Image (cartoon, one colour):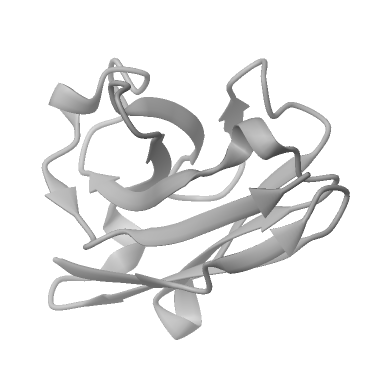
Length: 123
């Protein structure tokens, strides 16, 4: 499956952005969807994930209550709604897919990646 992330941009603290991840190739509904981010000088970190059916979601503690992951399998598209953004959310955001929902917090367990989209939150 090929992934393409978009929707990043510059926003003030407290603002919102919605990232999209369009999948092509193999059936998107067969994969768990994940979002990771990487800030300058830091390792890539887990943000959120949603299993294939959409029934199970998980979030990093740092974004819980502010970010919402969702997917529309009919459109082969995943989303990350980000509200109440903080300067510390500034990073390149990547969407990812995995065929088995194991070890989802470890980027090594995700086999497919989008190209990343920059999110910058100003104070």
